[in-house]
Length: 531
Ligand code: F6P
Image 1 (cartoon, rainbow, N blue to C red):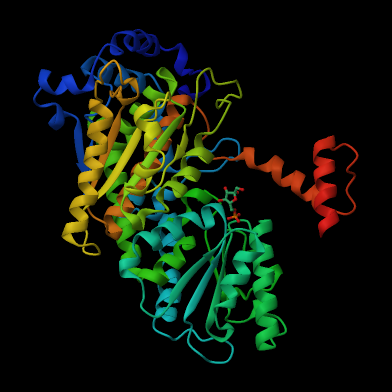
Image 2: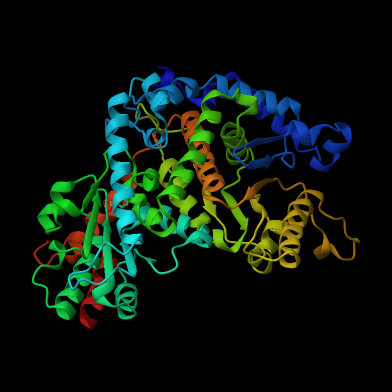
């Protein structure tokens, strides 16, 4: 594979793009429409109910061609095949990366020589179905024999963000009498206030953790177990029907006391931030029903097919990846804003933060040498129109370039036409305003809008399990393509380890604290003095 030697900044296309940045700064995006009346048609794509208009970008045909050349000089194509075929592309952990297999079908898996995996995946999917059906139908009973009315997903990072985001986005379809709650933070207020409003007899806790060693999740589980112990006089609450474990480390869950029959497993080749498609998605199936969980997988599968088979210039994740890289590396754009104009998608930017920043926030290439350019952007955002009344000032007149992804939903049964029209009109107006800008009188420079600020508009036909599945896969693959271009490993997360080790040291009574810096030692003393 080219991976070993490749450095994007040493390619001919990189140099060509560098030159193009000079000429492009004279270009006004808004003028490109007049020069080419098929721009919108050429610069838009649709797949699985998700439409992307990328015409409002600082890109003309020369840039588009150069970006595509950049892609063809990269190891992207081999890496994409290697991912789908299950080669160990997560090189620092020697693991394949196969979240796509979780939503694949028999034929596709067989074509990739992964039929055995298909059988294991099918068995786990059946398990999700059985357990979620049993809970939804009232046949999963607590220790006193009562039906489950409340499910708490205890997990953090990838064991929380995906299911939380999907359940919120698709709450239109939520079960009317089995409610799902999500507890991630170790801040005790959260678990305490969640438990306080629930009845232990009718509460089920899902401990979702790939490793079953995560400090926050285990402590929250302990607090929940103590609550059951106290209220239901259970000696070992973990070993009852009040606890389910979802994990890739069943031995750790069993050690904690969770019953083997209450365990759902997945595999180490599913990265935490890619795990909502696995048994980690149990809370999704409980909330929405297994059939809708399958539809979510189907939408993602359609995007996978598109990603794997469409030519680069017609490939939605590829196009979004190239545009993002164009701004990050050639315009010094530090961040990427994602603004869904749909309140139910309020968790989407937070979900994307982990997906993108834990994947591509990296400093070294596959061969261990330093990258010579900027890698993953700082992803942030919140819903529109709320954001318009807080940070949009900076988007329009601030000194940073912030590319924006606007995401809207065309048909929304949960809203009403008068509200929905206002909502979407605002989204389109913001995208247009960022591009067009506005000249001001010389005496009023503060009224000047420079414009020429790029954005994508993504329109989903509706917010359904299918389209949401496709949207998530779109971003997953965008992040993957960028990782290939930068030649970094998008599938490990060593950067989170050091802080965990230090927190353990601070917590441990036996550990030697003499090598701590003065600041940390003084702050720790202040904390210890109050507890
Ligand atoms: O600390 C980062 C991380 O390892 C994420 O990658 C992961 O999604 C999260 O923690 C939770 O890990 P686990 O599922 O093993 O509890």
